[in-house]
Length: 167
Image 1 (cartoon, rainbow, N blue to C red):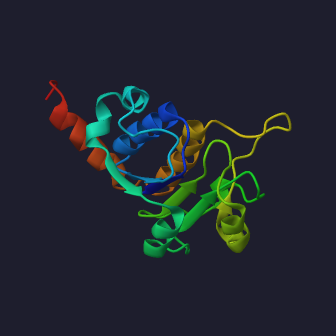
Image 2: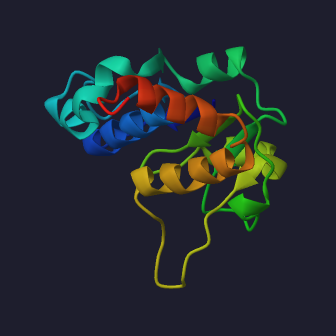
Image 3: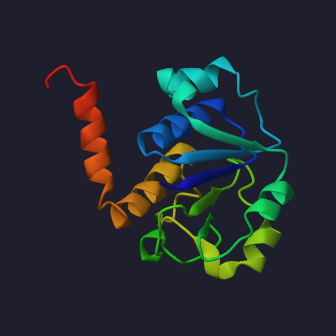
């Protein structure tokens, strides 16, 4: 469905929560090193519960390696607080790459400055600086799903019926 990319995530429960979200959306999770934790960390798995083994996970050694394989183009979205382009005004397509920076630093400013047309943000009140990473990924990714829902509901409902005892 989508490619969720976490650049240098630092907090294991956030990554676990995002992994669980990715499983439920049939999305691939890309983690770009350095990570602030070991992905075998109990906190990651606890937040992802029993979903972690179902996760389509790709780990990259660094951002340059990721960008060499997936250059920033019209199918890339850079989530940041450093733009005024609201995420719900962006056009998302199946297979898009949605990048989120670390909880402490965000996405490298040079990447943002080189790609201002690919930057998106979540509106917030004046008192807030940013949202939790897991919340941010959920908000933006579900907008992407809303824009591409046709067909997804059939897959989702069919899978649930196949797993259900109520057939």
